Image (cartoon, rainbow, N blue to C red):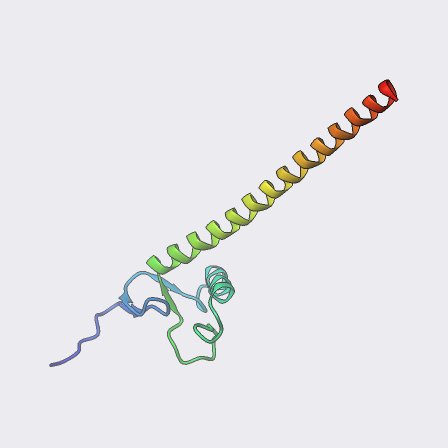
Length: 112
């Protein structure tokens, strides 16, 4: 049986499926640089290491683009939220300590 390559389809580097829509990460300089950066940030070099000199596909399909960009946004949002939460907890603790010192100092001057 003949294996006919579908016209206009390219093999996605991430999911391994042939897709018509996506980005060649080294042809589209801006979008491609962002995608390569995200891929290299989250994937071990042993799993996926996108470089212009490797022999694998340089194409990332639209579905995978959306998934990795959404994941990157989620991680960044989570990091920002966690830092904000930690700062809020720290501020509350400092206010409680300050209030306790104030009460303690007023008690000491009133009763001692």
